[in-house]
Image 1 (cartoon, rainbow, N blue to C red):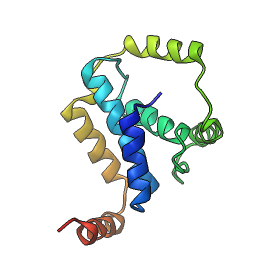
Image 2: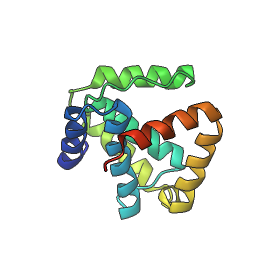
Image 3: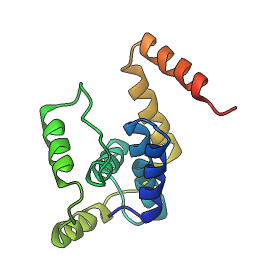
Length: 142
């Protein structure tokens, strides 16, 4: 279950007309914080991000799966979207947390996050990166 502040921040982003990925970013941020605090761990940075995105979808963020994602990921995203607004199963939730507690905490380190960002950026075309950089510059607070 996401924290109240996280849901509030995501709602604020939605009110401001920000993209669903920005709204979902709040949940990913929360997940990274949980790993850093020692609440639980994650096998990899990718897993930590996936957990955050899943939480976002279940909290009602209208976030479709990325076009390049696998069939399995797409199916999981659809399941998460269908679960939106419903209460999570206590037994399943506890089992997931118990399994994650056994994982390491290095997935949320600065180095791991930096490595993940680099590999994700490498997969994008130069035009795509340039376009988003220009958009960021345009929408930056003055």
